[in-house]
Amino acid sequence: MARKNRDEPWVTEEAERAAPAEPCWLCGRPLGKTVDRFHPIPKSRGGRDTVAVHPICRETIDANFTASELVRHAQGGIPLTDNETVARFVKWVAGKPADFHSATKAGR
Ligand SMILES: [Zn+2]
Image (tube, rainbow, N blue to C red; front, side):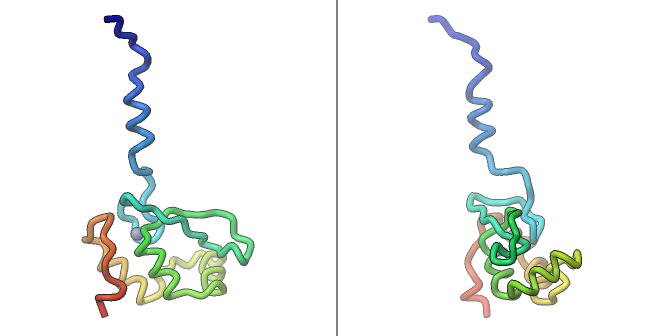
């Protein structure tokens, strides 16, 4: 039984499977299993960088900002939570589990 000690392969495997350490760009909670990529500056406006967000956070952004507004926020350094609806969403979602995703429909 030759047990080769090859840098403990399970360690790297585990690291790869783990969720990214970066928090959600919008709400700051840890990300869950499903991670959406969001363009702070929309692709249509030449934005290339993406940030990681929860799907529910992405939907909230999509529902509350047009492409031009996103550009204005990104370029002016204005946080999206400057929008009252988004600020309220972030507060509301703060206590939810990372994979929580019910209710943009049910909750009105
Ligand atoms: Zn989020």
